[in-house]
Length: 64
Image 1 (cartoon, rainbow, N blue to C red):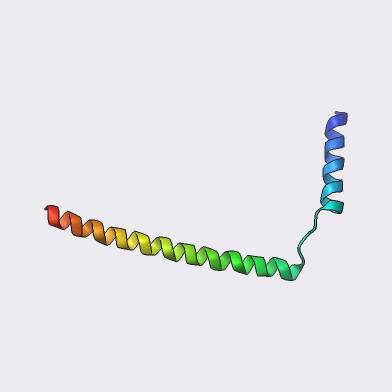
Image 2 (cartoon, rainbow, N blue to C red):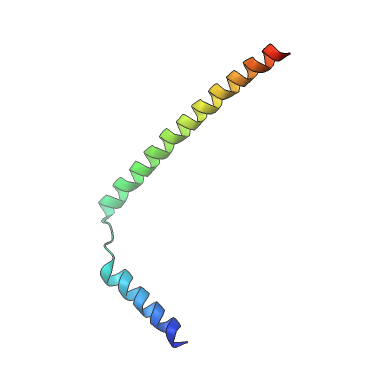
């Protein structure tokens, strides 16, 4: 039981003293970057899916 309490004490000490937390502005900027990157990746995947779907439809028409 002593090991568990030591673990939690050490974890709390590390989180409160050693970790550098971002400022509110840094957090907002990082969030915007992640959202923009997510939208771009989503658009790319959608485009690749649409193109591959059209290509497969053309191939299926040729084989029928």
